[in-house]
Length: 151
Image (cartoon, rainbow, N blue to C red; front, side, top):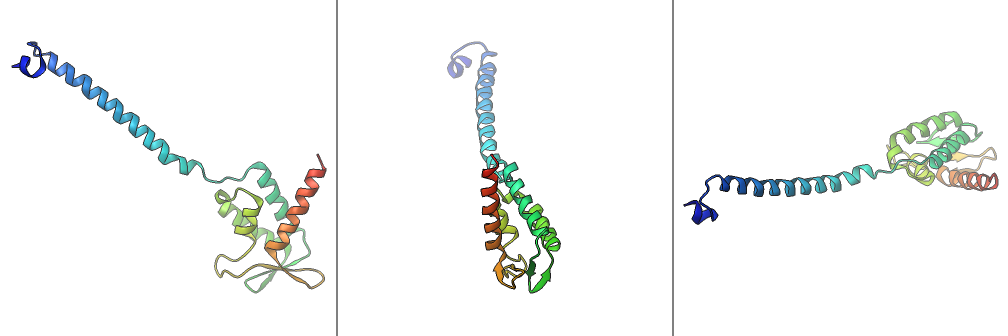
């Protein structure tokens, strides 16, 4: 009977063949699972994380806000530079994994209120109102220009 099914008269040959086939299938299955798990893990490891240059630029912007003599308007309330900087720092820590450039920081942390959607603005010492995002983009441009000169 073994001869008809497995091509041999030895009863122990059938379990060995099945074990080898099962081992091959198991190896193939493990390789497939490994590949699938790698592909599933890629989006989680590819999250944006600020580089040192980005973090330096963001910290410069926050420090610039803190030392500014501007009045910051957020949800119709007035804030000093240090108060506005503290708020932006908290938002930066909250959005840190979504920020890969200083422009991302400005967009996510210094442009508008998450709660109301109202834009942030600043009042200059000359009583001119500017959108905070636009103002910080100008400050960022000056930072980049001065950083290039220092090399």
